[in-house]
Length: 320
Image (cartoon, rainbow, N blue to C red; front, top):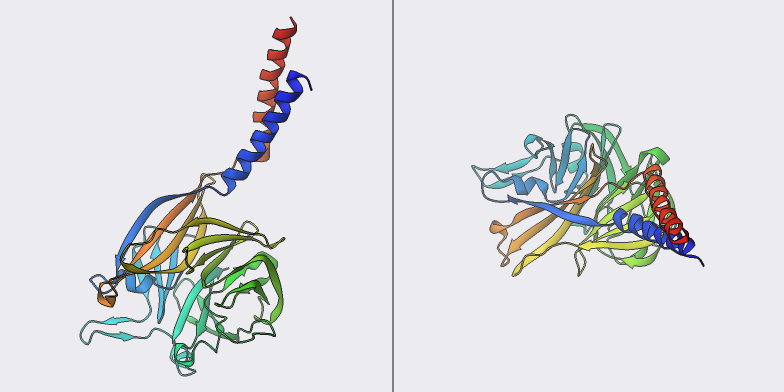
């Protein structure tokens, strides 16, 4: 192989490797700490899930929802802490609470609708459902769907989270236990459709979102990892492991992603931190990760053409 061809092959390989690496190289950009049982109690309302809503965020906690702006300033909450009695007042609508629902997991938003995973902690998470709320004011739409899993495990803890792929008309979920399948649902009524088989088993998934053809999942596993699952192939990739606080109980929770104006991507991941087992001292770390924008194919073509021009000049000088 002559010098020019060798240079071209090496350059193309380098560009390909760089493009692949850049697509999955996440950087921790910031960490916000929100106290749970110390004023202003913001951490309490950000303990289960989070979703991007176009101009702000929607968070879930066990008994309700919260809207914020992009800077995480609270705009509206349902339910909360009664400071006079220091007791929790549920924000779960009465008609849902009457059915035994007492736990909201991670949520998702599509076309102005919040899809909230619901279950009954008192019934050992055997009653998974999806309830629909309006994203602009957190009001309940009255629409509720049973969330069943695979025929082999139709009810056991299938509502820790739900993720929505509106463009393809499907929703996703997974049993909290260890397993290599993802449940796929018809988005119109959340009837079980089929399972997606992954090439490795995952356990204790607490949140997930569909983004750019993949399912990004946050896990409360031994490594507190964030994973990416290719929805076409089922290939699982561990992206990174979340920071943990020494001497504390660290529990991974929800996850959300959004694309920024410059083409980069922001990911939020929630982590409940309970120092020394002291529930009153618990707080939430909200980790902000960023993914640099990947050049468009046209940009790669221009870069490669430039390299070829340089290589050609080198060869001509050697031949001259």
